[in-house]
Structures are given as structure tokens and as C-alpha cells.
Length: 210
Image (cartoon, rainbow, N blue to C red):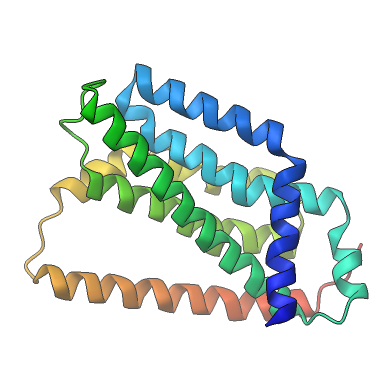
């Protein structure tokens, strides 16, 4: 548990090293949302990319793998810390985007007729989920340089289609009850996350450090 905590803390040290870059993303996200309310989801995606993916790229360039392999840390712990870090930052981004949404709507800035707080939350969570359980694992296994084009395409896909995703969530009409739909969604997310984690852990354990 101590190793896990230290690994997560190490990733936040990386964020501190990128504070100027992330500050620019936050400012751009706010400005974009003020001038075009439909950009709030794209802004959230940009922030998630900055917090999760860009941090991992920074660590890769800093040869963090050498440090991890030289410490008494299991590959499973390192990968788990990445997933926990991704979830934490997704939740923080949801908090940021929801707060921005409420403030803009309260001040009557922008048109939010096609966007609800619930659809914004789900869309932001979906983007964070894709980056955490698909994009980041591919990057950790294949390498950021070798698979950067594929990873960028996968990462940008949910962001580019975020407006469509949001509208789909807003107009979603299912025959099952909301409680059953929520339970089913949670089970699917947990299953996909566990599959992603175990596959990534096993592959990373056999990876050679270049």
C-alpha cells in the first residue's frame, strides 16, 4: 500500500513539473467554454489528456521505467497506480467541468439547451475511461514513440465526437429502469477495467526496459 501511495504521489510530482503546460490548458478550456458552450466537453477532454496522457509521456521521456525497475516495486503495483491516478484525475476533471457548467449556466453565458449536467458528467467520464484503460496501457506496452499515432487517434476520437456522445446520453431511452441501467453500466465498466488491468500488468511484467 505504501508503494502504491508513493507511485501515485510520484505522478503528481510530474504534474508539478508540467504546471505551466497544464495551466495553459485550463485557461484555454475556460475561454473556449465561455465563447462556445458546446466546447466544454472538448475542454474537459483536453484537461484529461493533459493530466493523464501527457504526464505519462513526460515520465517516459524522463526514463521513469529505469527508476521503477530499480526499486522494490512490482509491475502490478506500478500499473495499478496508473489506473488509480487515471480515475482520480477523471473525477477531478468531472468536478472542474461540472463547476464550470454550473457557473456559466448561472451567469447565463452560452446556450446549454442540448447539454445537461448528467450528459456532461457521463461524456467526461467516458473520455477518461478510454484514455485510462485503452490509450495509456497501449502506451505503456508498445511505447509512446512507436505507437504515438495510433494512441493519439484513439485518444482524440472520444474528444472529437464528444458532442455526439453527449447528445446520445441526453436522448438515451432504454426500456430498463434507471437503477438497472446504472448497475449494468457499473458492471461493464468494472469488467472492462479489470480485463485491461490484468492484461496490461502481465504484458508490462515481461517488457524490456529500453
